Image (cartoon, rainbow, N blue to C red; front, top):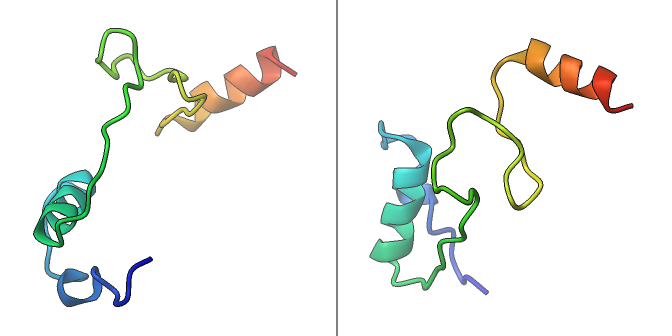
Length: 71
């Protein structure tokens, strides 16, 4: 749907949190978006599988333990 790469101009200049950069690009280009609730309490900590079935985790041992317990 986009006619140009809206990320290209600022691809290597943004030094903040990636989600903030994406929000900035969407607003700058007047692209509509919707925030989707991921957790019933709107808080990501402790890290766990969210309401979309996604799990953002940095601790590989937690992932390995989960796979072992659920396979």
